[in-house]
Image (cartoon, rainbow, N blue to C red; front, side):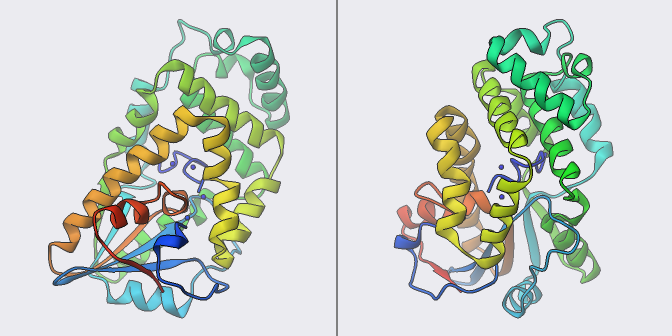
Amino acid sequence: MTSTSRLSRIAATLAGCTALLAAAPTLAEPALWKVRGPHATVYLFGTVHTLRADTVWRSPKIDTAFGASKTLYEELSNTGEQSALQPLVAKYGLDPGHPLSGKLGEAGKAKLVAVAAKLGAPVEQLDALRPWMAAVGLSTLSVAKAGYDPNSAVDLKLKAAATEQGKSVAGFETMEQQIRGLADLPEPVQVQFLLSTLDEADRGSGLLDQVVAAWTAGDLDRLQLLTTDAVKLKYPEFYQRLFVERNRGFATQVEGLLKGEGVYFVAIGAGHLVGPDSVQADLAKAGVTVIRQ
């Protein structure tokens, strides 16, 4: 629910190749999976990168798995650290010499102006941003306006709990890798990302409310329909870079953990754990059995 660690809602764009998983009843709690190696156990948990402060998502099952783990792996080890984020945004997110409005075409420009006005974002300031950065910024404003709080993100809550319990915290990606995953996209794909964000912002909080409801209920089919399916259908190149390529990398790193020892809790955006290109699907292709708990 998709992606800097979310980089906002991407990061929040967001979980089930159920045909590849052992049958399990649908439970009114976020989905959790277990993967076993010779001497290691990995729990896979999909997160949402922004929530309303009163959203209830913890469960005895999740708490038990988390408590048994010695290390928490997230997309980033330094999620939420603005001091690390700001210089990277300055380096990769600005392009004042090539105004954003000139990259969108008339229809895209009109949509940008309308959404910016709705969110109270000055278009002249947005004009200095690269398309990916404008998308992240507008997404953040949109969810905040709808009452969602990035400080309530599951990633941050789990990281705080891990630190309190003396667990190690590690990341599958660095903040620079994650930002460059967007900044290095060809400009037409960045524009796709921005247009997708404008579509969502124009619809208000309704879509995100539905995503969170599906996530908290563990309804993977609904979550897939609302997140990855929508992006894949309308913006296939962006889907390839944001989900397919990164999911392969996440799966490879999970395989590495399975070769070690101990118990690990892996918490990544829920969108990486749904659909035919999910992390679980990549693990299944490698002969790794993934079981929903």
